[in-house]
Amino acid sequence: MFTPRKQRTLAETAVVEGFGYWSGRDVRLEFRPAPVDTGIVFVREDMDGFPRIPANVSHRVEVPRRTTLQCGEARVDMVEHVMAALSGLQIDNCEVWTNQSEMPGCDGSSEAFVRVLESAGAVRQPADRRMRIVDRVIFLGNERSWVEARPPVGSHPVVKYHLDYGHDSPIDAQSCQVVVSPEAFCSELSAARTFLLQEEAQWLRSQGLGHRTTCADLLVFGPDGPIDNQLRFPDECVRHKLLDLIGDLALAGCDLIGHFVAYRSGHSLNAELVRAIQVECGMALEHRRCA
Image (cartoon, rainbow, N blue to C red; front, side):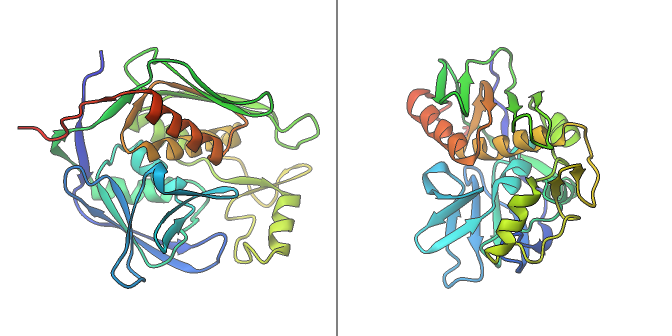
C-alpha cells in the first residue's frame, strides 16, 4: 500500500534574503544540495567552526510562538516556514546555510522559499526515503487544544486543522483539510501568511520585538479584519496553521504517513506529537541505502 519514494535533493544552490521578524536583522539563506541521508541541516556560517544543527525534534527548544532548534551554542529560530517549504516540496537532503540565527520572515508564508527551491530544481537520489506509518490513534492535549495522529486512510498523508478564537474574535472559526502532495502544498498552503491580533502586535512592539515588521509584511487583525492588507484566501488563517503543522511534522526527519488532525494546537503541541509518534510507531525502511 505504501510504496517508498526515492530521496531528493536540490539540483543547485538557492538563495533567499530578507530580515527576521523578531530581531529585525538582515539574513541570507543558502539552500545547498546534500548527499543521501543527510536530512535537513542548518549551518551557522557566522559562527566559528560552522556549527551544524540537524532539523530534528530532538534539537527543538521551547520558545513562544515559533519553532527553534539548538545544538550546543548554535541555534536557529523561526524555522517552521523553511521546514514546511522543504517538506512540502519533498526536498529531503539539504544544507541550509545562514548568517543569522533567525530565518527571514519574508511575507510570513513559505512562498519565497518555495519559489527559489522550485527554480533550483530537484534530483532523485539512489536511496529510499524512510517513513513512519501511524498504526494507532495518538491523542495529545485537552478540550481547549489538541492534536491527534490516526492511521492513514489512503496512500498520502492528510492534515486537518480546526481554528477557533471564539465569538468575539475578528478571525472567524475555520476548518481546512488537505491531502498532502507537492502540488497541493504549493497551490493551497504555501502562500498562507502568519497572522496575529492587533493587541498582540502592540504588545510585542512594547517588548522591543518586531520593530522592523509592518502590517504589510504579515496579517495583523484589527476589529474589522486585516489592517493595511488583504486576504489571499477567505480561510488564510487556518491554511497557515496547516503550513505550520507540516513544518513541525517535518522535524520527524522522515515521511510520516497518517491522518493528522489538530484543534487550536501550536508549535509545542505539534512537536509533542512528533515525539510520541517516534516512540509509538515503528520505522519502515530501516535499510536506508540502496544496493
